Structures are given as C-alpha cells and as structure tokens.
Image (cartoon, rainbow, N blue to C red; front, side, top):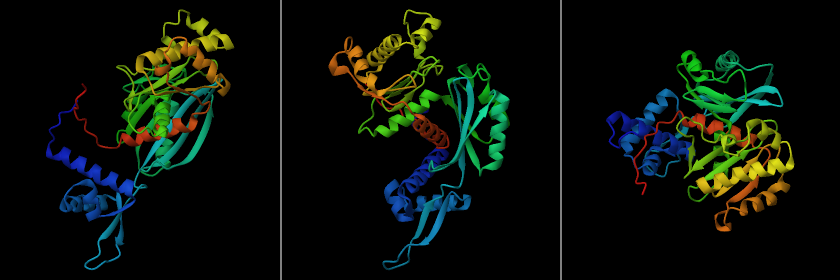
Length: 344
C-alpha cells in the first residue's frame, strides 16, 4: 500500500483526475465552478484546464453568458478523446464465442459484435485485438472477461480449453505495450455490474452465484463495496467447496432438480455464513424464479431469519457483465492512490 505522503507529481496527477472527473460528472463547467467543486485554487484549475485543452481531453465551448464583466470560458469533458476495447470470451454448450465492443470515456458503448469460433487461443485473441485497435480511435485500455481464473494476466482454470494455463496478459502486453491490459473472471465483472445497479445508500457485502448447465458453479463477491478477488484471484470458485462428492458426481447432481437444490442451498449457506451479504443474486440457465422460495426455505433450515440476505434470481446477467467489464476497464485509466484508513 502506498504511503499517504505524496510527491509533487503525485499531487498533480490527483488534481488532474479531480478536474477531469468533475467535468465528466457535471457535463459543462467554468474555471471558477470547477475550482469551487474540487476545492482547488482557480490558478491551479486554470493551469490544468489549459493542459487538458492542449491534449484534447477537454473541449472549450466558448464564453458563458455574461452577467457583467468578462465572460468565463465553458469547458466540457471530451469523452471521445480516447476509447477502451472490451472482449467477452464465452463457451456455452460447446460453442466458443467472443463478443467485442468499443466504449468511450463516459462508458457509452457501440459496435458490439459477436464472433462464433471453432476454437479460441491466445493467437485468436491477439489477432482480434490487433485488428480492432487498428479500427478504433485511440484505444487506451483493453478489458477481457473470461470464464476462468486469471492472476497477473496468466490464465489458470478456464472453461475455454485453448486459454487454460496460457499467459494471455503477458503476451498481449508484449505486443500492445501502450495500452492497459485487464483480464478478469466473468463472475467478478458481473458482480461489479450488478452491485452498482443496486444503488445501496452505504457500502454493503454482496454476492452473485451462477449455476450454468453442464459447467461448475462460480461466484463473485463485493466486500464493503470493493470486489473480493483473493490472494491468487481464486475467490469465487465455489465448486471447490467441500460438498463431500467428487467433481463428476457434482456435475451429475446439477442435472437433477433434487441435486441442484441441494448444491445451491449448500453454496448459499456457505456464502452467507462467511461474508453475511445484504443480497445474493442467483443466476444461470438452470435457475428460474419459481425456485426462490424453496431455496430460501432450504437456507433457513441453517441460517437464522435475521441473518438471511435477500435472494434474487436473475437468469440473464449479460448486460451487467458488459457494464462491469467496461467500468473496470475505464477505471484502469484513472490515477488512484490508496489511503490508509482505520479498520477497527
């Protein structure tokens, strides 16, 4: 963790980020209004605004309406100054696909397309990324969602055979050195997208768990508003819970209503007693809304009522997966410094 004392360069980068984020959220601002919102001096804001104008990261909209005296210039964040490229890699029912899209700096998405492929390898992804960078404007970050585990860009367990055990991140970074490279688990990204949609008044613990057909279950967690990935990004691999059956038997159980109910309840109970979430979203094509009460009652055989979270069954979380990936990819471009805060 970085110390809280900052050098001059760090302070300037923080201030630049403040100005850009203020303009992004307000839409349009003047030097004076930005200074007021950021609590920076007018002179500091003026210097930063001039630099951002030169790079093209903001736009000068011309003078504001005069109320006496010299009218102030109005500035707007230039969301199209750069873009991010996002890829979602899937394998469902033996079908391999890559969905790709471009998003501007406000997270507005366009050009979403899905490719169906015979196989997906590192070379497949690298070739597609190269073609899309050539096509799109000023790509500054590449975000990739995978159905598996990635640690420092190296993929471990993965439902896509051609990517399992492969150093996808290092390979891409070697070729695309100017771009940020983000590779993350599909559930981590989905939980981030879903959590942001809840609009909790304060930071909460939150979980998403999925039970897809013919695949092992997976989960994603938010702890006090922050994604939980674990020491080696293995967090959420709930198929490794001690169910007392082999992997093969677990897959067989997931094919029957009784076995599915048993495994889902055991998974939910494990999540509840460990992270005590406010809500759990249950997804996957084995789920339907009519199962909600049975799952609730199954959990209540172990969990006291007052500690029972809200259970939400939502079959389709593709949109939340995409919004989570776009958000994480955009965040990779921001300059953030971690402050030490009291934990007890």
